[in-house]
Length: 258
Image (tube, rainbow, N blue to C red; front, top):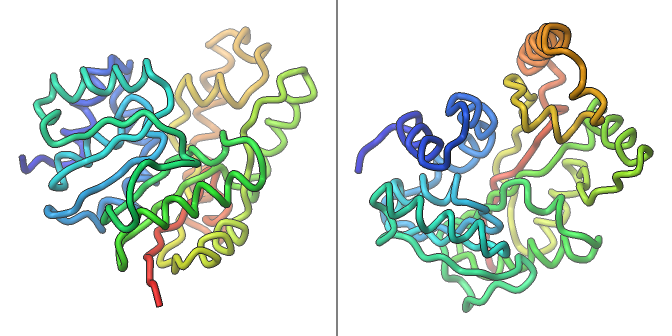
C-alpha cells in the first residue's frame, strides 16, 4: 500500500465528501509534518479524538495497525464506512471513548496523536489528564504528537474574543507553546520538535468557525479577495521570525521512562 500523502488525502477527502481535497491537505499540513516522519511500517498508531478518520485512516496506510478513538458515535460510524470503502478497515480498530479515560493497558502504542482535540476538552485539569493518558498508553521511546490553537496567534485570539462577546462562548482554548511543553515534561514526554502553521489556505470551515456570523453575509466578491490577501500575508509570515506564532502549533515528543 505504498501511496504518497497527496493520493491518500485525496482518497479520504473524496469518500468523506469534502468539497476540496486540496483544502484538507493544506489544513492538515502541520499534523503531517509532526507525525508522518516518525511512523514506521511496524508501528501501532492511535489517533485520540480522531473524528471521522481523516488522520487515522491515512495512518493505516503507513503503519501495521491504526486505532481510532472517538467519543462521537456518528463520526465513528462514518470512519468505519470510509475505512471499508478504502480497503483499510482490516488494519483499523475503532473505539468509542473519552480522551480522559483511554481503555488500554500501559505502553500499547508506538505513536499516539491528538490533533486539535485538547482545545475542546473543558477544564484546565482535563488537559493535563488527557496528555497523561496519552503518555501512559505510549510505549517507552514511542511518540506523542499534539496540536492545538496557538495563543501567540493574536488574530485568532482576538477573533474568538469577539465571537464570545457576541454570545457564543464556545469551548475552544488557545495554548501557549511553553504551556504544552511543561505539561509534556511533567508526564515523562521529552519534546523533540515544535512547529506552527498559519492558515495559508483559508477554507469555508476556517471562515465559519473563526469569524463572526455576520461576516458570512458579506458578498463573496468582497470577502474572497480579502481572504486571498490574508493567505499571502500568512504565507510570508511563515518564512520569517514570526513562524512560531502560527494559528496552530504542536509538538512531537518522545516517551523516555527512567
